[in-house]
Amino acid sequence: MEFSISKMKEIIKSQGDKRVSEDSADELRNVMERFAGDVAEEAIAIAEEDGRKTVRGSDIREALS
Image 1 (cartoon, rainbow, N blue to C red):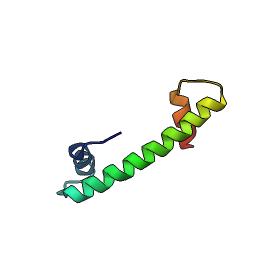
Image 2 (tube, helix red, strand yellow):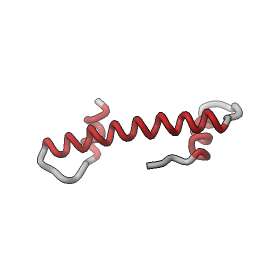
Image 3 (cartoon, rainbow, N blue to C red):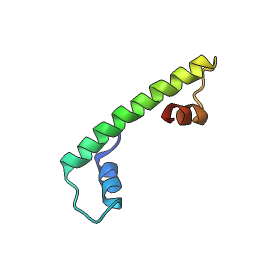
């Protein structure tokens, strides 16, 4: 999975009118990828525990709680 640097810059800029370095956008991308991977793993485990092959939105929400 990969988030684009430009999208990360857009997210940071949307929170305030500041210039955004490539390094900060890259770091946010790394954090988001790790976080998303962790959430996905937990959601998959929840679906498997329920005997399903399909991960649902409710699994994602439960993984975040």
